[in-house]
Amino acid sequence: MNHRVISAIVVLVAIFLVVAGGLFAVTVRVASRPAAAPIETAAKPFIPPISHEVGEDMSDCAGCHDSSDGSMAPSHKTYSIRTCRTCHRLEVPAVM
Image 1 (spheres, one colour):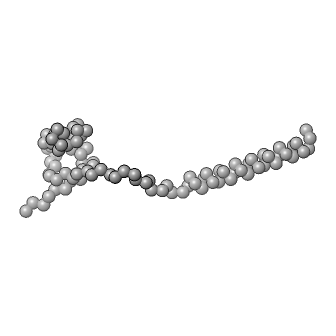
Image 2: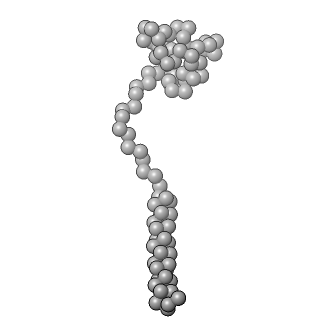
Image 3: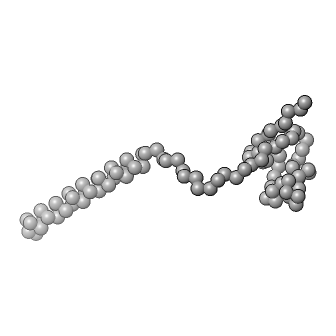
């Protein structure tokens, strides 16, 4: 092969390696930055508190609450007491 062709190939390979190294450095730097807080676009739904005592003898909320009268969401029919308390906090009113 001609000396000029070999020199051109070597220069192109060197340029390729420099560009690839630069892109790798930028990628590592971007990936190591802490993530920005997500932008919330929708308001969080209101989750009503549990405003009464919750005893261990209660098996589920459907014994007193009903999805047809609006005192319980229809999707909550099969939830147990433990499931309810993962979202709803217990807020017992003060007794006077």
